[in-house]
Image (cartoon, rainbow over all chains, first blue to last red):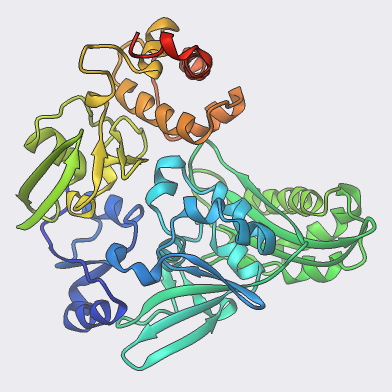
Length: 284
Length: 168
């Protein structure tokens, strides 16, 4: 299958891209790496009149140190994110999750911001971004605004990015020295997770002092497991030590039932994977 | 129509294409490079893997216009002009890394990328590195063996005395 015909524009600056969006917004789709959009277009699940390709905008790509945060340009590829030394040092959870996105070929083209803006609840990057308290920098005709992770994911494939706006970069507060693990449960290789858990943990002398936990595919958006985080403070950094806290992973979740598993099955998985993810992140 | 120019298998090409044309279609239908095949057409199977600007991509999941100005390398230019096989091709032949052969162009192009990044992979790293390529014949065992053997071939070649190198 090939996509339905569309007009194509590849702006070379954010300003040009915003201009194209204001002209064609209602009939346009924004493309970063295209690894999620092109399958949708090929299957004719969507047939926009215009495709606005952000791949030629150099300023939207790259990773930089900005004091208390790491800033990841929206069109930085997963491959570049997972191999980046700054990300690894200050936001290890992002490195771990980016490594698990799809397969090598997709990671060479797919982008960090594109995946987050696509907001697939089974996507691997939403839960880590949420857990780390990421901030989303969104540019539109009215200027630049910053949206907190808690407010970014609105619903299934829906974010706080407006029709005439673009996600340009994501700020990840530094979590230097925190352990991290992304535990993903899949039926076959390179697929979306049935459930996954993103955990990053600050542990001192075998005791967890602080933990941040995000859940993938346990609702229509990525979810923060606040109950688990609270219960983990002071827990021993081992599977047994975190077992009780992990039981709280299902609080406030509303997982889907589908061919891969029932909601009940997903709730069971969430507890088991939370236990494993937190223990691994804590080095226990 | 959109004008595109790129370097494909070490030759410069220029064409007018519809923006919706996939890179794999462009390679096969415009340039006649049918060495790159279409397997699943859903970006799952990896049979259409080529290198774009030096990295492996699934060419059914890239628009030809996205490759404008870039460099594309396909399975067709992997062997030398005199027919000498690339070490990865040689290894797939030696280790029986194929049966029907349909996944092979993609398997080989992904294996080349894998070995470029990690010249001495473990078996586990090979299996993970090939997770985006499906084979319905071999059960992967001989493919993994082939990639490990290719790594050995490349290491041997690098360690060989200069006079016994490619020019000998």
